[in-house]
Amino acid sequence: MLCVVWSLTRPWVAMASRWGPLVGLALRCLWLLGAVLLMDASARPANHTSTRDRAANREENEILPPDHLNGVKLEMDGHLNRDFHQEVFLGKDLGGFDEDTEPRRSRRKLMVIFSKVDVNSDRKISAKEMQRWIMEKTAEHFQEAMEESKMHFRAVDPDGDGHVSWDEYKVRFLASKGHSEKEVADAIRLNEELKVDEETQEVLENLKDRWYQADSPPADLLLTEPEFLSFLHPEHSRGMLRFMVKEIVRDLDQDGDKQLSLPEFISLPVGTVENQQGQDMDDNWVRDRKKEFEELIDSDHDGIVTAEELESYMDPMNEYNALNEAKQMIAVADENQNQHLEPEEVLKYSEFFTGSKLVDYARSVHEEF
Image (cartoon, helix red, strand yellow):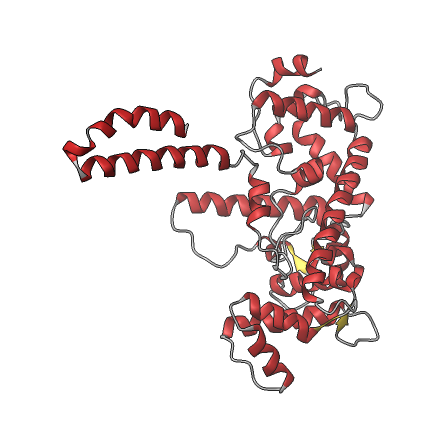
């Protein structure tokens, strides 16, 4: 490209003596333009899915427990996990159906998944087949969390002794917030008061409480790699899952009886409805949480959810829950009411299963099979 640009500019060289500095400046600009275009063409990255972009943008030293846990029904703040069905249907392929993906390729990919779920190859997915698939995809999320936790553990265990103290973690956490790692470490070593803002102090206190819970008896405030995994991902530990449930109940329980009634569970988050759109969002919030409470969480249907019921509901490796979820997922798309999913139905309700709406589903099913 540079040669082409230079050859195009040669006639101007002869005129350089007449036009003086302006021609020289023009030549330099043209040459630079060619160089920039060449560099841009070779350096421009390929298209990536939004999931990969999010992963790339995540700081490598991020050591805070995530707010969102893949394959878990509730968020850490007690909100419903809106992506749950896609997470347990797609597993580690969660980012493979972005809107910018070529539609025919996405349809083919969805039908490949259908074939894998359909173990007996009868072109129908039963509740048992979907249950098995949900458990398999949840295990994939578990494996991803373990690999991520292992990477973060190495970041907070600089001496590589296989244990992380609370003070070591606190130094790295405050460093990630912009504090000097050396100053924080010195202050802790000299038992001096750390100067942090009120919000950071509150986060630190919550993290320390969670750190204590993850520390298996006898408590020594030193976390091993498995304990650190439980600290970041409470779904990996029965004790930490119970702690997470306790926190959610505490936040939603309005009368202090340590259990949840329907009004408590569906109560709107703090805020006021300002317009019709906000009203619609609140209506959806109440409808969705009421359905979840009555059909899945309140297992004995007595109108009260105990901590034990909530823990069972949130346990991602609970096979009984996986079967209930499988039946629910089938019911969403089961237009012919035969208690099975067929290819046409999965393609038609692709937005529910993948987050992307794939058009021409009826015609496409014959192409993909």
